[in-house]
Amino acid sequence: MKKLFFAAIISLACISCANSVEEQHSWTKVIDDQMVTVNTASGVSYTDDTSVTIEITDIKIPVFNLKIDGVKFVPMMPDVNFFISGIQYKLYPSDDTNDPLYGSWVFNEASKVPTVGGVSREEYTLLNLKGNITDNGITMEFDVNFGGTIYHASFGSNDALQTWEAEFKAAAIVVMNSGEGSSTSEDELSLSFSQENLSKQIVDITFKDFRFVAMMPEITFTLFDVPYTLSEDGTQRLFNVATVVPIVGNAEYSQYTMSNFKGSVSKSHVNLDFDIASMNAHVSLADK
Image (cartoon, rainbow, N blue to C red):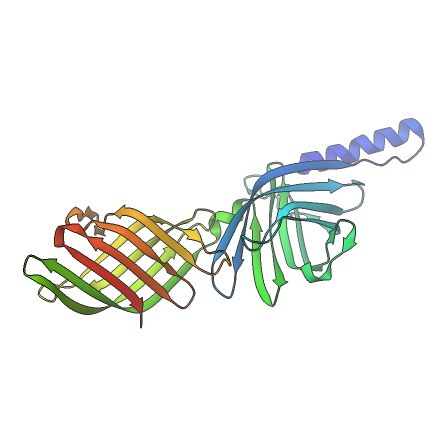
């Protein structure tokens, strides 16, 4: 990017000398990637395909325009195309050529009002708009107060840095069926959710100090890479998995394989139901 910047300046100078006039030099780049939007109140994320266009109309002036096509904060929201003009940037101040941001353009705007269809839309004001532009594309993030809720959006490699965690005290009701009838027991446990990358709709779920029946010792196990979908309003992660195998330490406990794993988790509530065929058991679990 630094080479590109100075090459553009040199090219501009040569043109000016040759023609005795100062001519404009512009630059445009289009990047297709995914934008991850997080509802900061619920912690629920939404990922959607987005196209970003960077436009520099005069290489001598350190500002650029940004077009973001396909903005959505919740699943039911129609795609909105933002145009943000006059974003100021500066060359990243690094002399280390091994620095991954060496030669990039960086920007940090406290507030920018986008236009939609040529009309200024203050309700979509971008807050804390920041990021960098490199030869490989653009990384950026911003906040929007949409409908009274703050949404945090990220585009580019920052997606992998977005995480989500939640922890609950929960109660599980276990119903075991046998030829002699059914029996019911209840147990308390800690339940935690961890998501390392919001651009991938999978979470790890850890059951701590849990037992399926009263006579067994308490165990801690994790369900890795459990897929989910988002509720229509974007506030809940929804589960509907045919089978999932618990992991204790590094070992699979296939004897405790869970089937018909269903339920939901939000910022403040969790409900899960699943069967354990080997034990003829059904487990219903909810936060306390």
